[in-house]
Image (cartoon, rainbow, N blue to C red; front, side):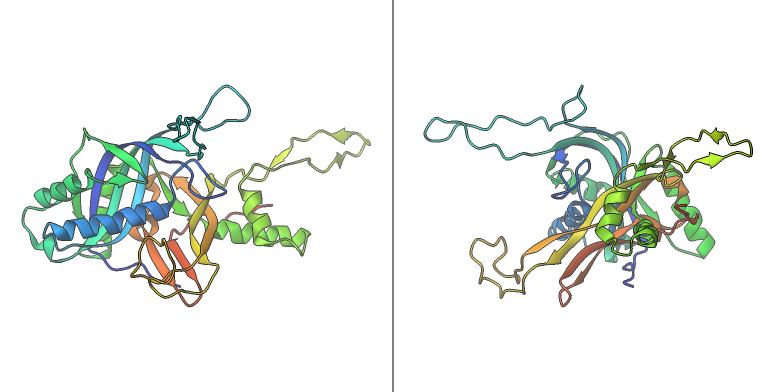
Length: 325
């Protein structure tokens, strides 16, 4: 298993308001931007910081959501995205509409950082400089609205194990109320095993679809001694699992790596190119104060070009073992 890159500080940028972020996270999911968008934001922020002579390495990121408002129609059983009207084309006809899902967010970003810039005695000023750079960028295609109500914080994670845990939990209390997204691949593995116990041909896709919806099952009839059938409630197989959601976690290659510049219209002509499709897993929204370690909070990039895997990883460990039966 890959390991979380090293870091010694958490940079917490609280209460950012983002307008019109991308709500379509993959071909199959919507409702919140993909974690790939936030890892890309982290890399772009690191490059921007270095242009300002801030020698800081950004190794992982987490997002805590305080409020959200997906731009969808209301009042019916089936919702649709609120779409914009595209300008007319050169012939005076309406242009084709490419469906774009949008969402307004209030969120906090947590970056795992390390580097010589942290030797500065003015850590509050350093955190504010980075936040000012971030305010000039976009988050998942959305615009950052000025006017955050709280100051950024550089939280050191040093000392003994107990000191690190206390400092981390103190930082998490600052992010309440809110919910943080973590990966629950363990639930997908358990559901796959449970489905295979009933159908040996069940695939991981069947397990993912099963966890992506609420499945009601009629209970088995229970006959009492007098022959009277006892009435039972229907069973919901998502009970006690928490707020779980289907999420994309990266990409898998569909073609061989092509040499840099060999594919026309590629965005980057200096990087090898390959066609990819989305990877999916199961995520869970949990309150930050329930996390015991920064390792459970943070997401980082893990690339394996030989296997064609480019994915986001999170090492959240649940405290409770779930039994689907």
